[in-house]
Image (cartoon, rainbow, N blue to C red; front, side, top):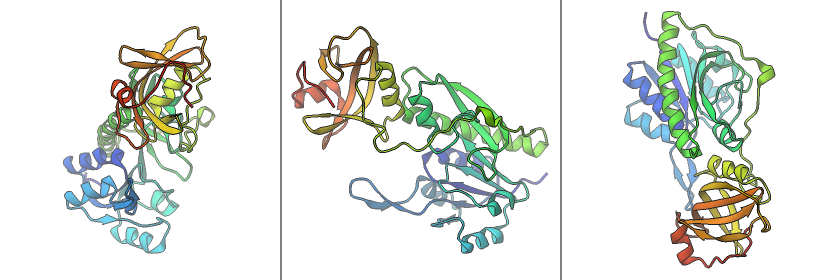
Length: 312
């Protein structure tokens, strides 16, 4: 059986392993759709999405529509006539013509065990909520939000100190491998879609601007889950002497606490102990506003923090 001609749609680094896997596996990728170049970083210089750079290196044609519902773009897709569309973190809601138009439909790599964590931030939300397991789902797309039929899933344990960045990379590679398995099974007719149980659905909305600010009165374990779930981006933060301090790594120390929430309780064994709800948060790696990311010992050499000061 001839392999389907694939139109790939993806934007961030999460989508890169899947595109590379398709090409290495000999699947005919006829084009790559990604978001337009955007200003990035402190200098706000315009930069290409990670998928664009990889696609150009592979010699694949790249399309960057401002809106996928634009008629010119839809006409281009119609001319390309893909048999199958593969989506991985593309970043726009797709119209029905793209979802249902190709002969073999449209499938998506989603980094959660659907129907849990539908939406834009499933990896962030799983870590923030203290999940111990997560996974990847290959699903058929419909016009809902991650609500289509499940084709294949793979579960994985979340490491006790694993951060968003680490889990993001791991699930990207898992998703790429699972995609190739799903495509082979679809081709052989051995993969049967199953509907999601919508009653079990949970949502994973985008991370709001204020969600990363640490509330020290919360349970120390909840605070550490927030730090892990936002590290390295967008990053949880607190304040010291009016300057923002981003926190990249921390641990929880459940205990009876006498100090007020946010009180610096001293440095020990290369960590800074901060009072929180039901224990202490042990800060390990931070970044003071205007400075580089550094271990807490290096941070304390250049920043005057004393026992009894209150962060936040």
